[in-house]
Every structure is written in C-alpha cells, then in structure tokens.
Image (tube, rainbow, N blue to C red; front, side):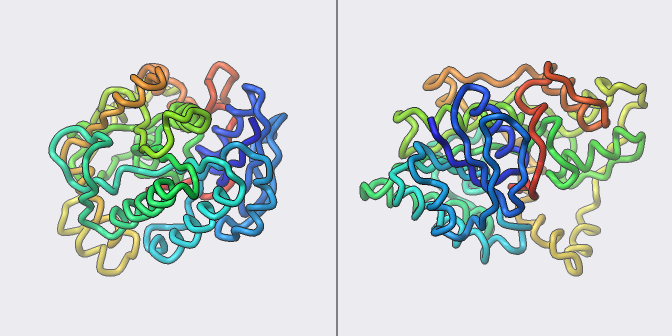
Length: 332
C-alpha cells in the first residue's frame, strides 16, 4: 500500500525500510529531505507543520504515519500543536488513516503496569500536552472526520538510536568507554525499553488494520530491566572486553540546582518519576490483537551493543540495521 511517513529519524527510517521491504510504496518526509537509501522509499523535504506541503505528498496514500518530533522539551508546547493539526488536516483531506507515534507521558505517575485503559493523569505539561493531542485526534475520529490510531512506546533501544536519542544511549556511551555513568533517578528500578524494530513493526501493523483505529496501542517490549542491568548486559555483549559499568546516581539537590540554569534539566524534572519507580509496560492488547511479540532481549542487546560500540552492522541485525537517523529522532 502507498504510505506517507513523516519524520526520518530513527523510527521513521526504520519504518520506511520495513514497509518498502514488504513491497509498499513509501514517501518519507523530513525537513532535510534525507533518509535511508532504500529501493521503494522516496525521500522528500517538507515542513511537518505545513498542511498544504504535506497534502501534496499524501495524495492516494492509505496511511499517514507521524514519526516526527518538532523539537526539544522546552519547545513542545509551541511546536507540537501546529504539527498535530497539520497531520490531522492532511489525513482528513486525503482519506488516509492517521497513525501517530507517541510515548507514555500522558498516563502520569502510576503504581503498577501502564496499560492503555488507564485514564490520562499526567502531572506535567508535556504529559498533559500529549494526552490532549490524542483526545483531539480521537474526537475527530469519533465525529467521522478521519480515522486515527496511536502507538505508544517507551524509551528507545536499538543500534540506530543516535547519541541525542535519549538517556539510555548517553549512559551507554559512557559505559562502553569504561567511564562512570551518572544516572538520573534510581538506576536499580525496572524500566521498560522499546526496541526500534519492534516500534516499526507495531506502526506497520496498526496502519493497515481497521481493528486498530480509534484506539491506542502499546509497543510489545522485552521484560523490564533496570538501567544498571541494561548497561551491564550491553557492556558484556560489546565487541571489546570492558569492565562492568560503574553506575552512580545524580544527587537530587544537584539536579535541582542545575535546573535553575539549564533549561533541559528543568524540563527533565517533570518526567523524572519514570526513573524513580518501576516503569512497567503492558502491551498485552497489542499482542492478542495483532500477534506481535517483542524481540528477545538477547538479540536486542547484541545488535544494540554492536551499533553503539561503533562496530559495523550487518544484514543479520534486523530491521533497524539499515535505518539511520536523518533528523532529530527524540520523542522524550
């Protein structure tokens, strides 16, 4: 089927490669116009907030998949609503289903696993924003104007996640160089991580299945591991022999002091709850409906360690191996 993918970061590139590999025709939009050099993928430049520009690329497509991130945390409130409105308008004009890649912020702090039936209870601006954008899209769906669905992932792991792609990658860069890791929150609580190829497979599944529409779906993810356990696994799987990672917790007073002068630290405080208590993900609805299961943790670790340690990737590394981050891929 013809698909418009907006955003050529880690997940957008992996999704475009996956779709093209199964015979779909893919137009991949990014601000730069760059993307994976894959047969069947046409890379074009456009602004994700420009509905008219996007509409020109959406003619005849069956699905519009948003893998876009419009900027750093401190810019979300200004940049996300215009992008979301443009994508909704494009899907409505074209008649395509709108699939949005999102995160888990909208649920807010909870005790127990995060499942899709939880009400939105975010305590911070970023979580409330993501919940509001979903509710606006869902209202349009229920009004019969458009068909929508949303895929919610946790923090990304995978060989193509770039150095700006999240805290885990930053921690791993230090651990894979034998340096001390300074972690925010508690490095010993279990935490869900979403493998990029699994995120792409979930997006591809919901884009072409009417059972998905009007509902959110969680990415099936491997059993939760703490940051310390994950870094230990990555170091053990790295091509070079390395010492076990030294992981230290950033003192909360130091983080509070830094937040007074560093904008990103100020924004991080709002979502720090995700690192201070077990962050568990229930994706059973996705598995029971679409038959999707997470990639085994051993494979996740092996491919990620090779990619992050700088070793060449091979065809055996799966869907993520041929995708590259053309633009800022961060969702969180």
